[in-house]
Length: 338
Ligand code: GDD
Ligand code: MG
Image (cartoon, rainbow, N blue to C red; front, side, top):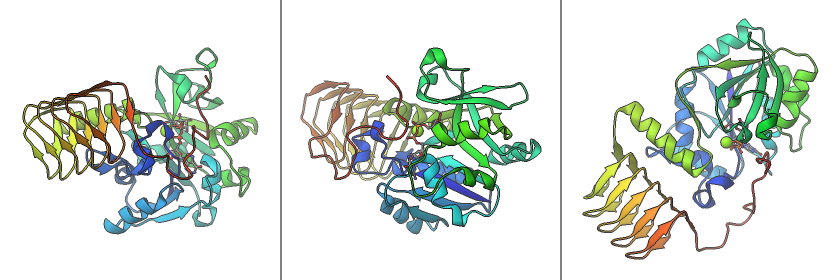
């Protein structure tokens, strides 16, 4: 069976981290986010990555780690369904589609079994949340049949609290619903049409954990959940840590100097954090420098940025360089309606 990993978004909500990195390559406990999805696939699954923005980083990662997979680049972003249509020639039957920014305990084997048992045309994984307006929401019957799918509805219009958890098992004929060579959204266009046509469209709920790593806060939350699963308070690569870490991860070649305290922070490679620095809920991309005595809360630093000694910063994104060429000014695709 093939699995199409949707990996072509710009990750605008994760800027400035995504100014220099493809979203699926952002590290979670020092491993690219996409690696968790790959590890969850049943053995023998053929991987097809539908990529676009900074696809070369994915190619390099696959090559260096001997991961078998086909990375297909879209000339321009085709949306969540257009990207699937674009890899149609590699699909030879029922197949999976997976968002690459989800960390979850979904058992993909059971998910596929459910799809087969129900003789479903399209099956999606579901998860309950409170902030439904940020997701695709379903109206579902007790037997799991989905009667309605609305992408990012205003809260009062949401038919339930069950949302699209970003994993699909699809009959190959779903591809016939998607027009070629154009921007098409699975959530806005294809799912509603499948329902309209009366095709069996089912939702699969599961236990455990689920998190969309699409925002800074959920990125930090995902790190916490994964640490908890490992029964650890922090992970550190080949780095020198003289300070204190809580619910944090630190990559390779970093120095975290004496007296510093990091709580719920993600530090990429090659960073230098001075003495007596206090940080909470911060994400620091590669090659950043933070001066002695700085106090940072809810701060996100893009690659190669610097914060001077004794600075006191809260709730800021640090990026001093021009936007990378071609990077959109705002979110494209299916943004939350305000
Ligand atoms: N190849 C390709 N081309 N991939 C894309 C494109 C594109 O044009 N646009 C988005 N993607 C990828 C993203 O990289 C991500 O892995 C996935 O498709 C979903 O896109 P997001 O931009 O992260 O969407 P979202 O988080 O706002 O909403 C989606 O996920 C929610 C669950 O986290 C929707 O599927 C919602 O219905 C769902 O609830
Ligand atoms: Mg997302």
